[in-house]
Image (cartoon, rainbow, N blue to C red; front, top):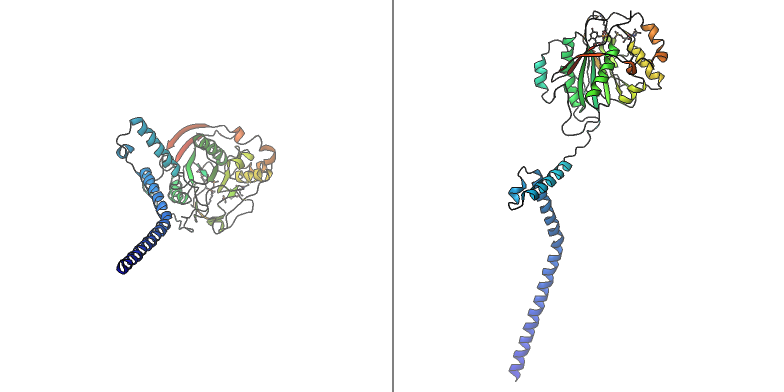
Length: 363
Ligand code: UDH
Ligand code: NGS
């Protein structure tokens, strides 16, 4: 009897110990299970995202992934994936200023330039001298307008220097060379009006840069775009000792948004020969209450390619009388009265050259 009581009590204690051990084991297991649950859930989520992104990035059709799906279901699924991919590709605006600018540049005109070399060095241009940045949406769509006649050598330098600069400035741009047809007296401002009108027929530009063919910026921080006020860009020219010749000077290179340009009815059409048309444009801007914005003298440095006065661009004797009456004439002489005839349009990788008959001065 005594022995059997002893045995029973030993068995009872052993069983209790086993039960306690089981409870401890279960509690520990439960504790660790709960602790890792969060972790595993987020891992599963990540796995699903990875599979989705793999599908999106894959060029393999869904057929490979789901071999038994019907073709219309596959088409829908493929379209869905394409849609998701398109959305994922929506580009951001380019940063302002562009992060790939380099600052001061060496500009010289010692050795001549070959257009084939310029074409090779700018492989990302498309026909007409058009460019758009790759990884972001350009802040502005800018038409570069160059008044032109018989300055082939100068144009080569302009294209050689400006294309790389404009690409670093991450602009969505096109280059328009407006070539005056025939050998009547030159009319710079009218050619600029033609450039404005013709560029807009091609693309929804929101900014226009008007640049003489012989002026090259010496710093790529001088961005060829538009600002809240009309911009004078060639503020510090070598030929004027890197200073403004006078405060109202608006010649050389300038930019205007479409809105600013239309506010002044564009440029005058009746300045034949050299001088005064840029002063008329200045008068128009001030008559419409606008001011001129400019880069600093350092950033606005530029070089002019030295040359002699062109034939058929002699100083215009009427210029002083005309600039004295800008306010009276600007509403009827400008983009609203522009008449011309396009003679030819040439598309090159580096530019669009529009040859145009702008007529001749009244005699
Ligand atoms: N232009 C031409 N062909 C011409 C005349 C003018 O392409 O026959 C264009 C060209 O883009 C030029 C711009 O119009 O840069 C302005 O011409 P401009 O003659 O008014 O000004 P530029 O600064 O010369 O070229 C000023 C006279 C230089 C006299 C120098 C005497 N040493
Ligand atoms: C002024 C002209 C401007 C000309 C500027 C600079 O005198 O058209 O000189 O000329 N105004 C008048 O003649 C009324 S430049 O030295 O670049 O040839 O832009």
